[in-house]
Every structure is written in C-alpha cells, then in structure tokens.
Image 1 (cartoon, helix red, strand yellow):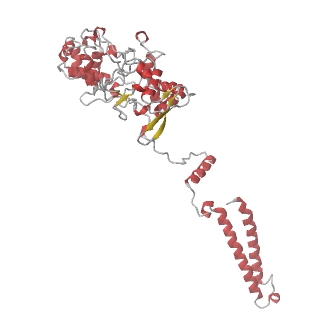
Image 2 (cartoon, rainbow, N blue to C red):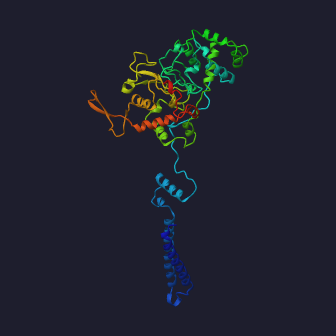
Image 3 (cartoon, helix red, strand yellow):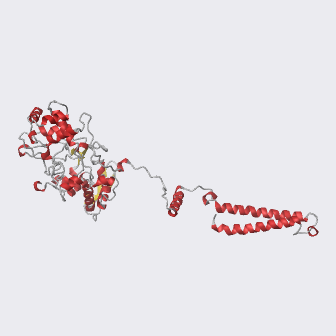
Length: 455
C-alpha cells in the first residue's frame, strides 16, 4: 500500500468504529431515550447514521484500492516494454539474484568468429592414415624427386624451422632457376578449396603433382620418371605396403596421395586468436581487439572470411576469387603488383587471384604473388588502398571526397572515402600477428623471421 494513504485509512477506520458504536447505542435506546426520539424518531436517526457509515466504508475501500493497485491500471494503461525494463532493472538493483531484462537479438553469421578446426577434412579416397602420412612425410622431404636431386617440396615449404614458406620473394628450383611467384605457406593449406595463387588446383592431390613436373621447380620430365625415382629407393617398398596394401605398385597417384595426406597434418590452430574466440578474453591485447573490430568494420572479412581467413577455404563463407585493383595505389604499382594478372590473363585490366589465407601471415613475409613487399604494415596499406579504396594516412588530415558529375541526371555526386589512419594500420597489423600459431612463432624467434639472411 502507498505509505501516504495509511494515515487517511487509519483515521477513517476510527470514525467508522465510532459510528458503529453510536448506531448500536441508538438502537438500544441508551443514546436516544424514547421520550426524546418520539414516535419513530430513533429509527430515522439510526437510518441516517447508518447511511453515513456505509458512505465512509465505501470511501475507505476506494482509498485502499487506489493505494494498492499499480498506477498503470488506475490510468487504464498497461506498462510499456520500456517501463517493464525499468521496473526490472530497479528490482535487479535491489536484489542479488541475476536478472535477464531482455532477450538477446540474434547475431548475424557474418559477425561471428570461429577457431580453426584441429583436423583438416580429407577426401573419401585418401584418408589420413598414419602409415600414409609417414610415407608422405618422407616423399615431401626427398630431394631425389627433382631432376638434379637438389630440390624437395620442403625446399620451398620449410616445415622444420620455418612457417611453411621459404622467405624468398620467389621460389628457387632446379639449377637455381627463379620462379615467377612467391611460395605460399603449406600450413593450413589443407583447408583451402583452391590451391596456387591463381587457384588452378582444386585439391592437395592435384597441387602436389604440379611442382614435381614444373621445369623451373623440380623439373621431372614425366610421371613415369617420378615413379622410377621412388622405386630405386628400396626403403620405400615397406612404406608403400603399409600405406596402401602389400605389393601395391608405386604410382604417381599413390605418391601424390601420400604427400597430400601428410600436408593435411600441417595444421596451425594454436594462435592467440583461437584462444580468444574459444573464451580466453586475455589472449588478445587491446590493440589486437581493436584491429579485430576494424578488420570486420572496414570490410576485410568480406574476402578473408571464416576461421582460415580465406574465402577460398573449405570452411566458412565462399569468396574464392577477387580482382586486384592495383591502379588505385601508386605504392602497388611501384612494387609491380599489376604486372602479373593471375587467372585473369595478360590482357586483362586488373589481375584476379585466389583469396589467400591470412593464417601465420606475420611469419611468412615477403608478401603478395611476386613477394615484392617485405613488411606487413606496407601490405596492409596496399590492401586498404586497392581493395577498400580507402585513403591511408594520418588521422589529422581532412577526409577527401570524390566528385562525380552525372550527365544523365545533371547532378554532382560527392562520395566520401574511408580513411585508414596510421593507428588503424598498426592495430590491424597487431591483429594479424595474433593469427600466428604459437608453436611456429616460438621456433622462428622473437622477430618472427627465420629467413633474414636470404631476403
């Protein structure tokens, strides 16, 4: 009951009790004798007093109702959602028990973050059996599979001391020949739906045969020559028997299946990012968290999507190929990033490339398909200009606008471009560093580089 109504009700109750007592005395004749009341006088006086008492009782009842019921019912209104939330919040402030004041809105899938799975998917015809993985590991490190017996898969994809690359701008093959493109890391390549910079291979099995037969890389003349090199090493016989079946022939199909099975074990999912999205809120610094938010808000995730940070992955959203708008960035032009057009062809206005994974990107410099950019901050600046069409520079500079005249509508359109500040670049780099696996980062040293002498 409302505290301000209590005195009124109390005094009214006293008056009501006094009236009832008076009415009883009148009826008995103690208060109004017969000689005073006359004929029927006592009855009329009692009736008048009774009606008065009923009126007092009704008024007291109304006061009690008004003081007890919620104001919204008195006003003829139900409480609004906002009023219910306010009331719940006030109750929560007076109570130690947890309170949910509103149902959470569904979060769009595009805003969710996931850790990388610990195991890469394998095709039905090439399961990752331990014996097949062991055979693939030996083949991966065997330089006898190259024409001059000097180059192995591991020569360009260092998985012993490095992060799955070689640290060179472009790979070196047999006879010291230089290729035309940078060697991507082999770590987490098993999650990619398309392999090579231009995405021309659709599986690890298909990709594995490419370098073996490339005249600049491993230089073998034919699949038959590769098979003969394996057969001449008697140590392979029991490995093939265990990986496939006793007496199984040595074939190029078995060789590339074994190499692919081994590469599917090269998973790096122990990055600070993985721990953060798994629930460890202290796994990332403030700068890394801010960089993570920028990565989403600026639109980087439109291409580098999913837990492998590539739209060309087997896991996550698909955005396999993207044009590379080099003409937007004088820096990109200076590094020759528009000379090779990738899968678009030499006559195309812009190159088209498979979206690479950003996993361990801080450990795999130099960057881009030609390996021309050494530092990660420089790569971020180029991507902001070319792919986001953003202005990259100090926050103190005023935003610039594009002015476009439309002859059709006879209007002048002003388009304000996004500005990516130096702090934004630094925080984006910090977030990208959080995508480096702990094991790889620790073995490559504090500076994250194992190849400083050859870059």
